Amino acid sequence: MRYKVTLDTKQQLFTVFDKKNTRVSACGKSIEEAMNKLLKMSA
Image 1 (tube, helix red, strand yellow):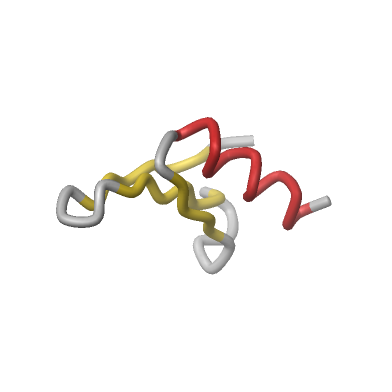
Image 2 (image 1 turned 30 degrees about the vertical axis):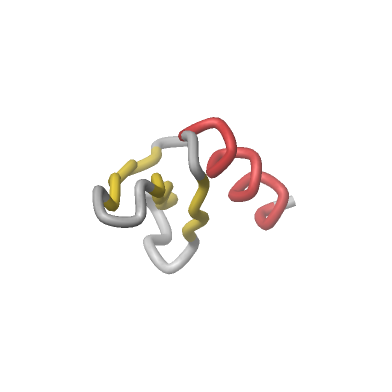
């Protein structure tokens, strides 16, 4: 799988997007937290 990661510097949140389906995304205070949320949603 491939992902795109962005950082909102105002809120200090990372957003991870699925490269194949950009409507699927998750936010977290760390990349790892956001990835875990994204993987739980896709399971």
